[in-house]
Amino acid sequence: MILAAFALVSCGPPAGAESAGAQQTPELTSPSAPASSDPALLEPTVQPVPGPPVPGVPPPAEAPVVRWIPIGPVGPNDPQEGRMYLFAQGRDCEQLRDGVDGTTFKDVWRAAGAVCYALRDGTAAQWQDAATALSAVQAPPEGRCLERAVLAVVRSAVEYHNANPATAVPVEPGTGEACPRKLTGLTVVDENFVPVPGLSRPSGPRAGGSWVRLDGYYVRVSEVKIDGAASGVETRSDGDYSPVYFRTPPAGDKASITVTITDTLDAPGEVQFFYDDTAPTGGPGTPSPSGPESPGSDSPQPSPPPAGNTGTEGP
Image (cartoon, rainbow, N blue to C red):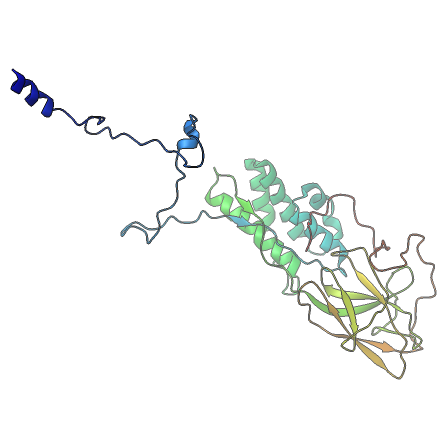
């Protein structure tokens, strides 16, 4: 009997083991902290398996997204289109709708407004309106980088919706810039910052003191250079994306000066200002009561912007 009992015990499972197919998970504890009774703290973090994918199994494809309208930068010499671009970038649908009449390429901004509403509310009727507005757009010419950037983005949003009508369009921030930063010209303005008529080229008295607007695409002009050197000239601006004005220095023995700028990124381009005592100056004018006395303070705009959010968060 003793031998039989010993045989039965030796055939049983080892101490502490479970039945086959129900392997016990060891308790996870930290050597520096007591074990927790919270099951969530005991779950290991899932990490991707290192190394190449399993043969015959393709890697998961990245889900497509629509990259929204990138930084312009807007053209300070084209204020209405610049504001509309910022409204489109910030998806300010109401401002896009209300500002169309002041633009040159109205069909582009109408399509942008229609897509804005469709992205916001997502009804089938709004997406149909967006597709209809987009079909009426004539491609802007090469030089209209703001409108061309907007058109490419709103077209991609409509195409995504048409391919995935039951899915919300995934929109992520845009990358890069729509327009290359560059200085393209100069515009002489009077003391009220209104362009002086009758000038065939940017010019003013040899005594200096003419107010001149920098034309082109830029964000934050940190320096106006004259003939390649830091000038120290007086400048005025409302800040990022706003027109920058500078006051010309005296001519000395020069007939003209070459103007370049330094921006937060490279901004090529050089333009000339000519000294000519016979050039019209637009009269002495009366400076605006809120006119600034130092760079970076508030200054009058060429035209008042509409109320509302500009939709920009910096360069």
